[in-house]
Amino acid sequence: MPEFSQEQKDKIIRALESRGAKQPCPRCGNNNFTLVDGYFNQPIQTELAGLVIGGPSIPSIVVVCTRCGFMSQHALGVLGLLPQEGKQK
Image (tube, rainbow, N blue to C red; front, side, top):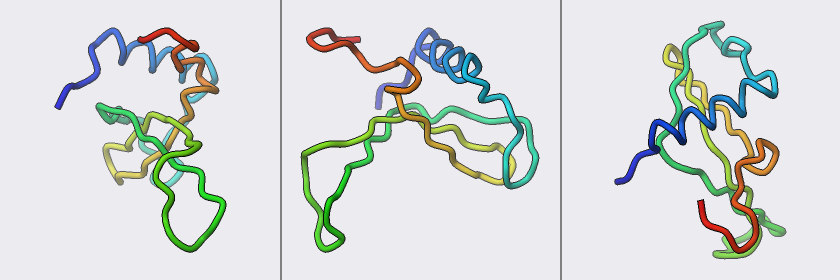
């Protein structure tokens, strides 16, 4: 499975830090986190029954606390990390 390049990781970390995402883990107070090597894509569902494949979603990255495993998701759009229309990363 392909992993983020160091350049991609650095860009994600800079985006998080520039928006003030530097606080300790909200569950255990740990200051060390790891970045999951890949994107999460959360589907937006309009109904509770069943699962719709395709449709709108929120692409995100996930940071994990190295002590307790708390996972925090951060939307790529808010971080300015979504590719522009018609352009690939």
